Amino acid sequence: MSSSDHPNTTPISIIDPMPYMGINLHSDGTITRLLKVTSIKATPDSTSLSHVLSNDFPLNPSHETSVRIFMPKTAFETSYKLPIVVYCHAGVLDLLQVDSIFSHEFCEALALHLPAIVVSVDYRLAPEHRLPAAYDDVVQALHWIRDGATTQMSGWLSKYGDFGNCFLMGSSAGGNIAYHSAIRALDTVNYLQPLRLKGLILHQPFFGGLKRTASEIRHIDHPRLPMSGNDLFWELGLPIGADRDHEFCNPIVGNGSSRLKGLKELSLQVLVMDCSGDPLIDRSMDLVAMLKDKGVSVKGDFTKGGYHGVGLMDTNRRESLILKVKEFVISSIDE
Image (spheres, rainbow, N blue to C red):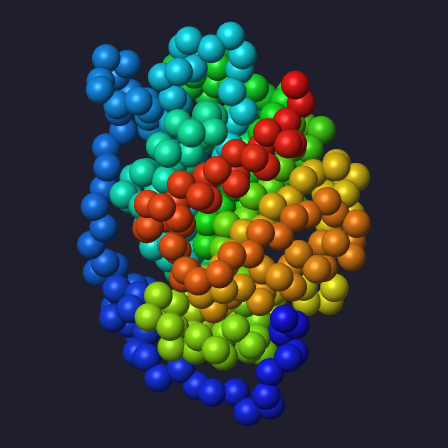
């Protein structure tokens, strides 16, 4: 449904966003994060019982950014190299990290069942670091992967990773970050060789706009993503003075970025996934329609039910999600 297909009178979300977000917002624009999320330590020891190894590596010490790499133990036994998936975690721009249980367990499952080497980027969070800081961090991670920052990292990636089949994926805010990072990476794509981006996977991407869509109105006070919380996340994440029709938030404003033609020229495959229970599904559908109009090879996968974040929190939906990602990766890779 188009974002214009709703009544002129827009309802207002009545939910207080602060308890939902798990933050205290201070008068100077800073926040205190109160949300308690379990953190998982990396498992780099090959003798561990885990089916997937993981390890942390610094990305940019001055920015205090890092990456967590996940590799299935089956990589030691296969005669072929595994595709590389660069993953941007969820957290609506302000919350969570690569070691948060939702991010860690999803990346473990992704690495195991694709199978693939997953590089999860611990990008800078808003409001301390507003957009485009996170986009810059992910682009830097792509160059870091290409360069081979450390001997051990090089051992995992250069030994077992297929640099010719790299995919950029993100969930929720990570979907937004993956999208804009892919567009930014187009400017330096020749310098990324031998790393070659083959696909872009946007899982319930976090986009918005000033004018409410029909699905946002339908789910105005959804307990998983009320629009009051959605709006505050954007207020904290966008450049100071920008509104929700800024291109970082609304990718279809002005008929999209002029650089989108680069996705077509690279023959980059795009998969956008969402569900009807997500208030943002209309945004995802509008994005697919725009990309198709631009000649980009894009597939929309829209299911019934669910909610924003269901693929990370519900084990059954996660399995279904990963199966669809696997099918997309297989269909996109070079043999």
